[in-house]
Length: 43
Image (cartoon, rainbow, N blue to C red):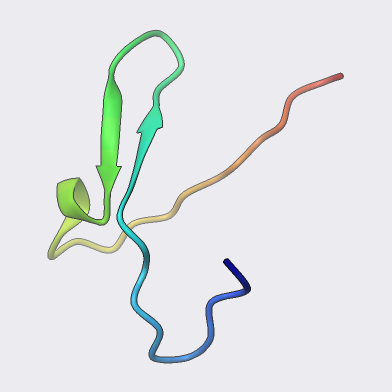
């Protein structure tokens, strides 16, 4: 998948949360402003 452009819909994805559990985007955040930070950590 390429870069999202203006008016593109965010794809449905499920992410593992540090410490356990998952979050589904955008489903679990529907109707709210949401910021997602991807941090690859120190390799």
